Length: 179
Image (cartoon, rainbow, N blue to C red; front, side, top):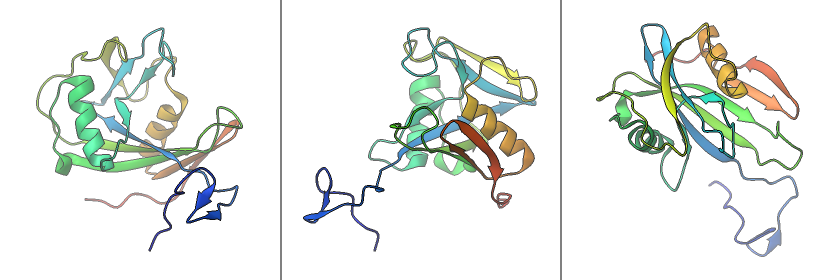
């Protein structure tokens, strides 16, 4: 059985929790590819994260499976329909506080959408002002750093990238299993 998360700050079943225990935020990221190009969205200038920077469609998991989150985000952000069986987990990026010492670790899961219905369009202008197809080997500058790392990892056949404070360690792990 997996350990339960803390019942309240700093305690688990009445006992102190190790100071090394820290939940990770989970992000679901979508890779839409067409003729050697990947779909990226330009974040608005007033965004809290990555203002005026290109990024793949993504969102935080909310009391749902990661695949369900990816399906939901495809509809909310792009207005397209994706089915869970059409999603393939192709890369994981583990951000271990690259932004600051007190940053919450994040586990970013990248799913390739093998098919979808509809054409991507801006659905949430407060989160994305434009969608554009970019050549995989000529991404715009700036693009979110961990997105670039994930795309490079996928192109190299790696399944995992880790980012330690203040640097990307690079691609490690094994080649993903084929479907």
